[in-house]
Every structure is written in C-alpha cells, then in structure tokens.
Length: 386
Image (tube, rainbow, N blue to C red; front, side):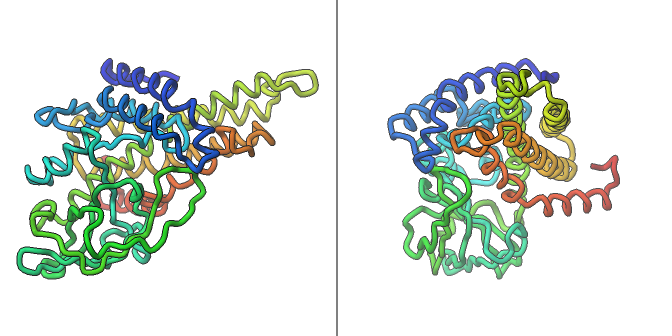
C-alpha cells in the first residue's frame, strides 16, 4: 500500500525495513520465550548496527553530528521498526531535538551526545500514581537549597529504568509555581526501586516504580530556564505520539500481510480460508483503516516539517496517536481471529501484537486524554485552526 513520500523518506524506509527483517525479526520468538531477553552478543550486534546505520542520530542537529532528518523520514524509519515485536528495536537510544534546545552545552556533552554514541541510556521519570496522564498535576517537588535542588516524589512506569544511566525527572518547583525537568544520575543517594511490575508484553526493558526521597542534585542539572515550564515535555509528547502512530502502522501492515498469507494457505472445505467472505471483510476493513492511518501519520509529520503552528501540531499528533493506536488494536484482534487457535499461541505474531499494542492506547496519554486535547483544540480554534 504505497503512498507518496519523499525520496529521502523512501530511502530510510528501505534501510529500516532491511534492518528490521535481518537483525530483529528473526529473534522475536526467542525473545518472547525468554521474557524479552536476547543473548548479550545479539543485543550488542543489533545496537551496533543501528548506530552504524545512523538511527540514533536521526533527530540530532547536524552541528552535533546527527543527520537531523525531516520528521517524514523519521516516521518512515519507525514505521518499519514497528513491524517487530518484543521491543527489539529499543536496543539503541534516540536523542530528540528538544533536548538540544533545552539543555546547556555541558548537559549535552555529559548526557545527550553519549546517548547518540550508544554510551548512555535515559529513562523518563514523569508519570505518577495519582495524576497518571495529567502531567500538569504532578505531586513530585523540587525545592531549591543553595546550589542544589532537593527532589521528592514517587514515579511509576519508568520505562527502561533497568537499563538507564540517568533519569529525566519532572517535578513542580513550588517557589516558581511551575514544573521543571531535572537530569538525575542513576545511583544518586535517595533513589529506591519500590516495585518492578510484570506487564502483558514480554520486554527486556522493565517499567519500575521509583521513590525519590530527598535526592540532592546541583542546580546545573536543571533542564531549561525558569518560565519554560512544560514546553519541553510537550515537545517530547508530540514526538512520541507521532512515533506511536508510525510504529502502529508498521505493526498493522505486518499483521495484515501475515494473516493474509495464512488465509491463502489454510484450506477449509476444499477452498482457501481467504475465499470466505467474512475473512475478506476482516482483511478489507484492516487495509482500509491502515490506509487512512498512514495518510494521517505522514501528513502530521509533514506539517511538522513545514513548521506549522505548534498548537495545531499538538492536536494533530493527538489525533494520530488516538486513531492509529486504536486502528492497530482492531487489526490485531481480527488477525488473531483469522489465525484461530494458532493466533492464541505466543509464537504467533498476532498473539504478541494483540498484547503489545494494547498499551499504545494508554502510555504517552490515554485515548481519553487525546480526545480531551482534540476537543479543546476544536472548541478553541475550530476545524481550520487545527
């Protein structure tokens, strides 16, 4: 199902597809049956190849050694990486452009560039038990004490915390009546893991709960300036929501292809299963929804590349996250049904995606939060302003 994309995006699409097919996909079942973990040599090889191909620098400004790809090309990459289960594409870090806008040169050299080189990995300590997706109502605090800040708060779902070298910790600064981000090294006194919950998916990356108790960090670890507030967190959300859309498109495409191949080979009453009209309807609905999802995802990416109004971009990324994540879940459900009993086996791609894709309707803002964002934008700006 081809849509019109730039030559650059098409090039990166091919590079990412080859990498996904040759380096990642062959290890999905092994990872699934081993709690998401692959042999260290394989993980190291996959990470090295991803960095060699330039994936860790796609959003990094050229002046820092990155390729600073258009968002359209970044979507093309993550769409192909999204075809793979078990989060095997998480083997490399990916610094984002907002980090270079927000961080000082010292912070960039100490934290961000080492991520691009594969020397460090980050994690986000933002979500809390109470506010959940409402990051504007966090309870965590950062109180100034001389040349330090003292951080307190409990953070949930700190994805990849078990692999991370440092945190992006978000807290309210009471004296300034706004939120701020802080860079916090793993192992700083006062940080404690209180839980490592098991989740539906089989990922090597865990999502621990961390308690920050009187964690002292120097003022030089604060990201941005007073008054920046949530600006950089919003940038992160826009980026992540768009890439969830991209990965969901890739997942849906793989599911449709594999389900269709099975339906063509499976013989029922002397005819391929694909000859049954109900199966054709499932495939037709899935292909139609994927077409709409790809058009919407790539157009949102191109709007970002055109530099359109950031508030309009924010609502568009929410639309992408909402529609495409829910589309992929519907496709996964149909694929399980087409595979029948085989689709309920963990070695089957439909079963894995059926579990894995469910969280895309939750993290980075639930579907309900996206609907609120979209509705508020519509009421404030009207259709043309979105």
